[in-house]
Length: 540
Image (cartoon, rainbow, N blue to C red; front, top):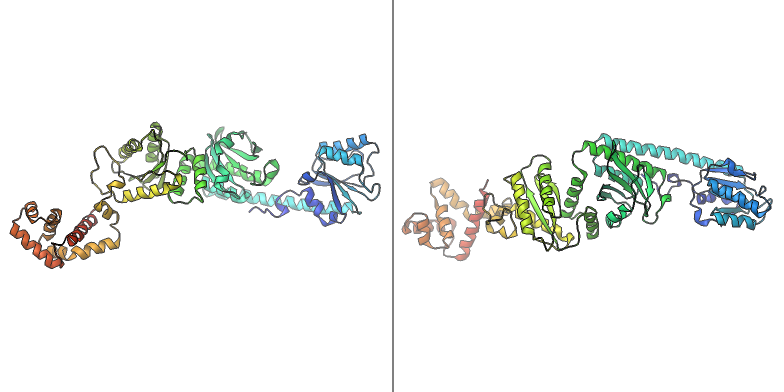
């Protein structure tokens, strides 16, 4: 939406005016104030008065033939001082009638006040200059009004469709072409939509930088970096502020225009409405999004991830990180389990982020410290989850040293969760699942929906199951006892309350049906795996 290359999208400057053909024909030369040619031109004023400042309001491009200039240097200085004091954009003097070179007193006075002084070596029709520039200015004003109207319409549409804070901040960044950040009252960057920069560039050292920017009651440019900030509040209660960052190559008040102010003011208003209609706190949404992006490796770079988590108040340097997943049967948005888990971690003094990764699944990223072992912390977390939902499953990945490796810890925790056998007891004193719990049966349970596992179990044991079904026999149980006894027929007979002769007979029948040799250790292993797969496939 922002037109960065068209002068219609920004104020007309002195440099723009001098480049117009009507003025370029006069062979303009900038004598002083080259650094101030980016001053906006609000109007053009032709004058032959000795005191033109009384007719000016600021921002005018003053055109003169030089005829009214005083002779004495003091009068020239007074003339220039009055123009500078009122805020004239520049003084353009024609060197055709009275002067053929600018008076030194005029040059010195303009240089002292930082007023751009431009000379014209050729005759220029000042009236034509006025007509051209004023037409351009009026056209720009009309364009600006249309763009402002589009801004209002866009934010109104966002509000009417119930847009959340992420949608609002994203729209603001797209409209302005700037990086826009929403922060809370403790200077944590909750949402960052970068434009023309990376998350790392925008958020590195965020809290310290943000605290250097005073919070006012209106939209204004302030702070050492020249941020444009707007409070987000409702009926006197402030929730945070929306911040628009200057373009990376430039800083300062002149970097922002009226449209930027309009965008940020409407952003703050839309964020207020979003806060009122969406019950989920901003912090919770920010934590959810950050964890999802981390677990799914959606960050553009490790540096972006570090900057984003640091801006949320999460340590990114330390003794390591650990991913924990909590799967519950929560049918709503999971607000209660999420709040309870977060509160438990805060009470225990454990630094972590908690967020819903999917319906019924919560992700927790723990920042580990050498002085605080993670097992007691996860056990405490697990017991809290079980108190909320007795059927909850808590799974843990492995410790990782770098934040960028946390995605691996989340993947491992996910595999542990998939392999958690229902009803399988855990070791005494532990209520959560970890990687060491994944044995043969948990592994097959995790793979139970894989067609290859199903085909394998059916190929190995299907004929035996069919025989039992048709003839009412229980050869599968005999095979189970035999395999569990590691091929010891006596033990198998005792476990099945059968005579050894009956076991021998049944085993021969099994060998015939399955076309196998039960004396082969390899084939017994294959059948044992198939039997374990069949067991997990029959679980409900």
